[in-house]
Length: 429
Ligand code: GTR
Picture 1: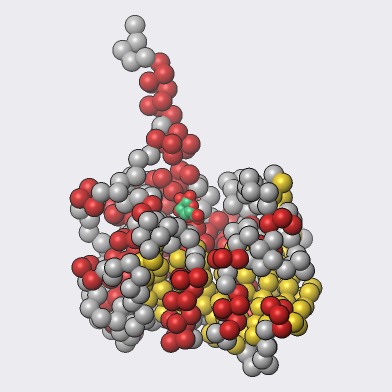
Picture 2: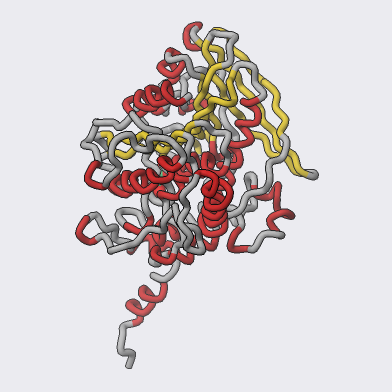
């Protein structure tokens, strides 16, 4: 007779794998259960030497950390290729005459393959180049404003039951449904431009073995990369943001040297990686990015490395899966992702009810990135950077080069968040 009933054995076996492990995952939300951990020191080289000058950071340490994020977390991305763009629609009287809205097609071509994504750009009524925010959106450019002239993406979208999609196809009924996350008028009134792209135009967000989206364009190149280090979807989206910046940089209405990259949630992880890997982004904003973004992986609070790699096996590189339930072996942690952005400004925002994204872990990453910001001659978090200095909800820290707030409420990008980003941008762009 079996010592264990068959169903038990099957569940035990299966739970080592994808979906079942994801279902059986129980998040820790108890601060006293956070494991003891030691963070890798951003200011000590891989061979253990202290880093005590900006030159040494630049010449050696930054490169070491960047390479570890490439090989162990996000995967390696191809070198930039030149992009083509054309403007397919213009409204010089958008938002009741306040703004100019332009609709771009941005095309990446390699061999006989190409990928085109639509970029929607709002800019104020001025002929001077303006600073701008660039961010990916979750549901299509037509969802950020209820303007019937905005094209509806034909790319795969996540099926929703609110009438905004038919299966995986976006519908006109979705026009403007995400406008709360994109206060275009407020951004324009403050003198900024806004550029946005539907992230699924760059890479559809499901695990298909990288057959669709941006990855097949570089399939031959990827062959030359060690399989564990090949780029995942986050790296693909970040690469798209860099190519979008190429276009904005050549645009007379936008000042390409004053572009902030912004993203929420998985797209916050993406904006951090874009800002870390492309030093042209002057300001980097992470809204509720959590695990794999601003949160420290070693805390394993809320979403963990194992959970994220199981639920979303296509987001990071394969090597990242080595650290499932094994965070202490990760040669980096996410304070170092923020440090890669230094001395440029970075803003991390959490939400009080968004425990899945570990608000405290996001704040602690800022605290532990602070020494790098200070070494590079900035004021880091502004005041004293210490774990016990985590601000209460709705008390933003805007004084330093690292901005932080804990908004009261849940997982979302809100007008409150944007108003802090605009104030911070006024200081740094
Ligand atoms: C969740 C995921 C998070 C976050 C979020 C989102 O399911 O666990 O890491 O990225 O999705 O992007 O909305």
